[in-house]
Length: 114
Image (cartoon, rainbow, N blue to C red; front, side, top):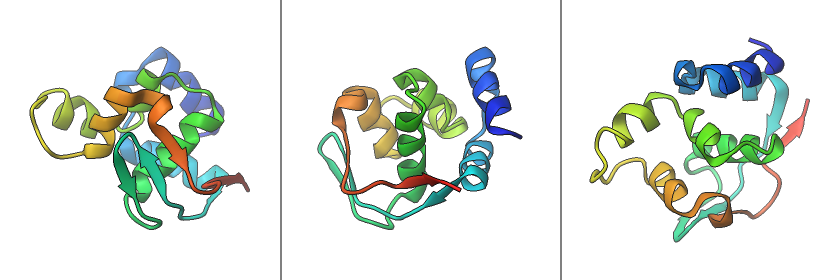
């Protein structure tokens, strides 16, 4: 899937977005550098939760809304989190739902164009 196709699908049919598709698009278009990042009160060390790091960096690069950014997590967001609102898993998703972009801070740039 091209970057343009992915972004178009994210706008038109966000429920169809899968986590693996998001990561594949990111990996095919960007170089990733592990970096520490904060998500609300959750601190992620460099190399920890790289999938979340990639998605949040991608969302910032493309000025995605919080909802579209969450849809990039696919079923981790739609099934694991939304269907289990009191769960303790997927803390990066849960924190982002609460703090949105105001809570995200990277120690360095995670994604650069290939």
